[in-house]
Image 1 (tube, rainbow, N blue to C red):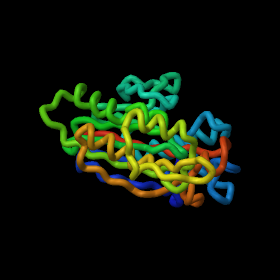
Image 2: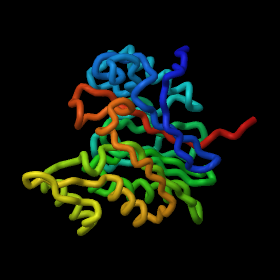
Image 3: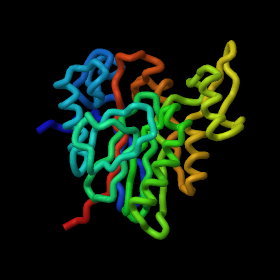
Image 4: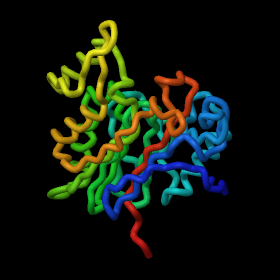
Length: 261
């Protein structure tokens, strides 16, 4: 059994007393080089397709699994809008960008480096879900689709949904082209608070700002934003934008707590 390292860093969002949630930071594992910490050692990379040693990734995932009631349901993310039941995720051959569950102890998981992780749960522990909200998925409505599927699957008269927005590329750090602005405007309309001009015809996009609009439109009123940028804090976070394709992935996890015996 892997030992949980004392240096391991995690964020622990509060989504209600019946819900568990974690976001793993960069340090606390066994990966090295670009998948290590900022000093090149002890990285907690959980991404299996980013060039890291497969044995290190397995060990890192084992370390993370000691913090949850069961092994997280790892899948392959494709920047789409597919929402699946975490109960059906057996391995990474399944491709989707959001997981939901009504089963206590099943751990929904998404992996991120700069994309926005959104964890959503009912305060009473009736359903929970994890969303990988990169700009393509966010602009295509993945948050709204996930909440809609949660309501359909749970069939509760009134879910008390709460959401947490995790570390992601920050507003000032995400500079991109006009095609991205157009994608967001097609879905959200004009949203000047979430877009600002950058350099030489580029634009800055506020992923968290758009996520808050999407959650509000889906009826989720209680939203906590950690406000952290992966790009600007190399000591704590991996970043694809900052470091390129040879970088690690964080785990954003949520589950319904099993009943205590």
